[in-house]
Image 1 (cartoon, rainbow, N blue to C red):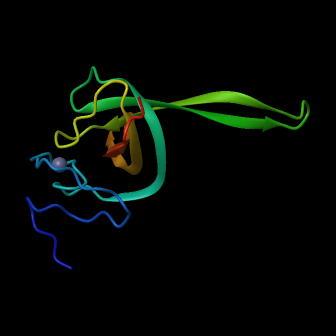
Image 2 (cartoon, helix red, strand yellow):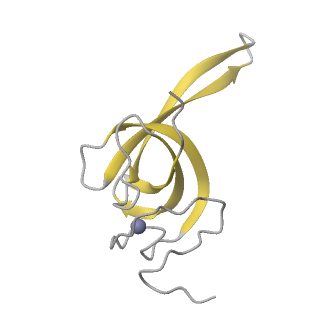
Image 3 (tube, helix red, strand yellow):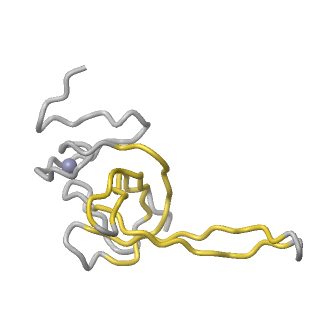
Length: 116
Ligand SMILES: [Zn+2]
């Protein structure tokens, strides 16, 4: 299958493509960025960077000694393409990609419906 520029690419996973089109080369839909690895769902806590968002989510780790779960948090930075444009408080799905910068190796691939 040929992939052309400025056309929305299929990512190989079930994701709704964004309605907007952008010229970001790190966009998985309109740029040349390839995706692989893990996906996570989390909430955006900061967007005070250029096309970058900070995403946090909770996970629980079982402690065998106490037979209980401990709550731990993960926080990663992810690329936020212009066509998705996620804001603080949005629930998003992120997927691993090649390192885009020193601390950024995830990209926002979908904005999830927020339940009010
Ligand atoms: Zn895009």
